[in-house]
Image (cartoon, rainbow, N blue to C red; front, side):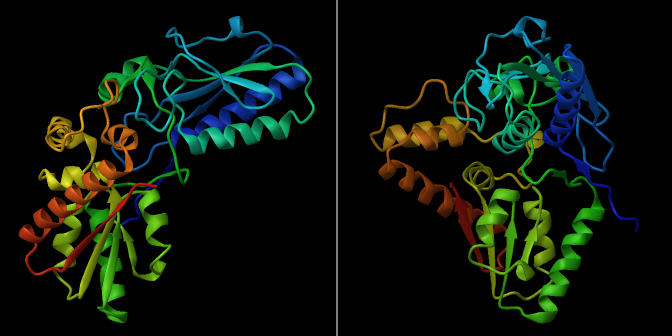
Length: 325
């Protein structure tokens, strides 16, 4: 079976485009634009083939911006805005701050590094934007509007890679990893959902017993059942854990969203009524809670998710570690 193709994240393509636009601006002194085309990979991804572009100019008015009013990220010599087709964050609770371009922290950090490296001693502020060709048309095919990102898509990325999570080949690769681990030791196996969860897991467990499972929670555990591990430890974020608790077999957003009304009702039942009015994500609610309620909510979700998993996989000794940092 051929190996699946990985691709670069929108964040990586944004960095490619920014470097090209900045270099052109420095050579000519004129408004510059550079486009990086998102290459095909074997993931289900609405952004495959689209163009991520950067514009650089000496005046803000020369940029083609998302018309929703928003603030600029201060990247040292560069003020960065949401270009046409990149969303603006209009609600709290996401990784990108409310009122700014929907650019996640890791790509934003790399964009700033590029700006500072190419413009170490530039006197005046430069204005720049990251946009997405046809991003406004792509946005309705994502969950952006539901979570408060308006006017385009988000610029994402943690590791820089988009890993294929959409076919049987990926699940086969999980089973292969499990087989290798089982051949060495059946003491425990660690499963992770997402890059942040993997980083947290590796603080306590060896990489040689850690397996990334994408969002395929139940599919991965069905494969774990083929082996005889004494312990199965799953690391995931609190929103993924709530989905598991509520019965989702796959935690990708294309399969639906967690029921936050249940969480709000639960908190009110505990006597907490100061819920944020604008947060539309569980993480946004969690981050707003006093520590006492945050820990209580985390324990509740963890216990309920573990009960759900153990009820469905009776032969497995499953533990859950929720990553909130």
